[in-house]
Image (cartoon, rainbow, N blue to C red; front, side, top):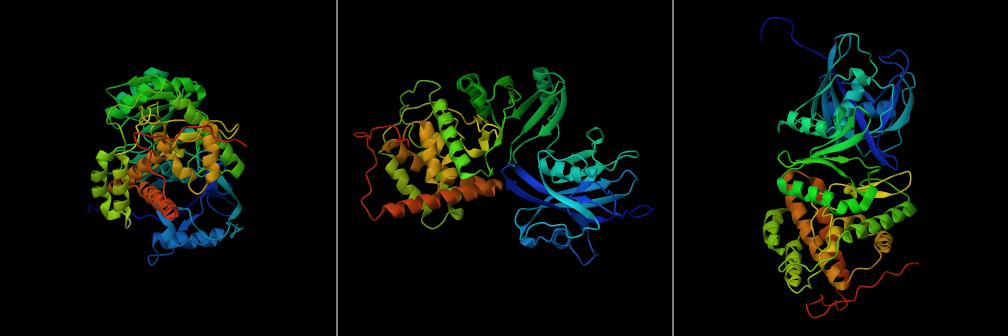
Length: 488
């Protein structure tokens, strides 16, 4: 190295203690008090390493106990983001922010001389009066960034202020900086569509190829900008937005602008938040699923049904390829079980085709907490198909909850035919295998876990039915009638 003083700085750890509540994703904040830096401001539970003998995970576990009395297993600590920070006075430090979703005990104020209050705060609506350094770490965490720089300038306040936001997200190994603005061409497209843009907020899922921004106009209007990962998805979403989505009114976004070359769309913002992970009282859950059933029926009746094209049964052509890719991740008996379902699929009756969403799951269904209304987003997998196509991924939400399935059918207005029930089982198994192989290949454990849950549930249902003679699958010569569900 060249001459001069070697760079040294403190290392600190920050606890993102996160829970899911009826209000949404929340994190624990504590208010600093007494003779400490940033007294009176809100911060995450945090602290310094005790010395060279202590690693950052051990320090986090220790600080969590000392400040909040919660007990954390080191195996439950997840790395969130690393922030290189410089204070307004010029001193710098490196902070390691860790997420913890499992712990023992209820948080309490364990050090009243340096903390006078604690509260749970919504992650998407952080309170005022926060330390800017802490707010930068949480904003970087929400954006999915791995590394961020937060160098404040002389004259900046210790407290966070939007007009002096010094957060800079460092692109990951793919070259993408989550939370940053889109590239120049895409940003210009959005500005042509909605006018001057005051703020960009990255709202992409923490999944490969998800690129979505919430944009706030200079006049406070709000829209979403989405870049599709391929032209097929772009064409599907644009077609859906220009056709059947309009019949849903406020229950679906409206297309503002589309650009085929950029594979980009700007759509209106909807009220509500995704139902994935939302905790509701049982009565609210049943009401929500009743509304979801009614929404599904509106999608499926957006245009007249038509006969299924020849050779358009279950996607059994992909089964062998997906099974081969997922084989090392499957449980004992899974492959044989799926092969048997594929064999049975050859005799299934063809089902009428309707408009379908294609990825109808709680992640893509919004619920408005004020009035309970629901809406659907993300139409990039929309295409005509059998109505049960939209029950494949949603079915995971009512596993072991027949009351929710009943509420959905009541809202849908009819029960499934025997042919639809048989098709649903096959499609669920094929989708589970597809999810396992894709999730394993792309580092998405949630998809893998959902696939295993689905196959285990289908196995259990088959074993439960095995002592008695199982009804034959509907063939091309017979079909069960479709009647309305009994309503109480």
